[in-house]
Amino acid sequence: MACPTSVSAANRTEHYSQPIKVMSYNIHFGVGAEGYNLRRTAKVIRQSQADIIGLQEVDVHYSERSHYEDQVRRLARNLHMHYAYAPIYDFAPTDGSKNRRQSGVAVLSRYPILASHSHLQTRLSTEEPNPSPKQLPGFLETVIQVDDKPVTVYNAHLDYRDDRRIREIQVSEMMKIMAKRPDTQFVLGDFNAAPGQLELAPLFKDYRNTLGSCQHDCYTFPADHPKWQLDYVMVTPQVEVIKASAVPEDKASDHRPVLATVRVPV
Image (tube, rainbow, N blue to C red; front, side):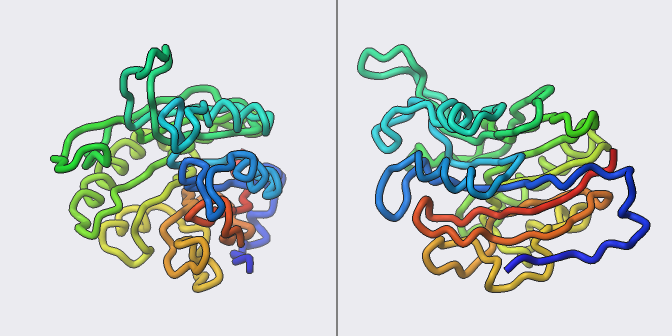
């Protein structure tokens, strides 16, 4: 069920872009209920007709779990999109390969990507048995040209642990970075926290959750029987939100995607 947002007639002017479909999707390295299948991931995105997509848990030559594929290039090629990639983890090649083993986040876009940058964030590594907080890359910033208007798109994958302290630090770091760009922004990601959790309060103060007042019909995790909204498409206040929903897809990943239709001031 989509979640429409009321917009005044004054906002429905020629000064807004055509509708843009924006998605956030944790693809779980292409592994779903029936095992690894990146074609299925691409099909979900294609059928959504999304224009800008923030992906989390994306591998590039990483391991057997994703068949050592360059997932971001394969998806971008199959969907005929521009892309930017920000590895969180970056390891040396193994077994004689020349390819570095990377895992992180990506942005796909039908619109031109003018620039991209991977910011550092405080993280607890998922690749170490007893990690300590440290700075790692992977908070992806891209500038995308939409109808001759630059739109800044951020993509984040926040800590999953029950203790919210790392997420609090991560959100604080995000807010400082995003405050440097006063233009139109989309903030996409798997935040691993529900809308009411305290660590997300700074985001909710300055940005709109496009899912708005949705309840059970807009939960995103787990994909087969969703109980929580962990995944977000958030926007700056000047963005017109037409509708938003969780995509009812339960086979391709352990998360459901969020899809929002918006218009940006131009």
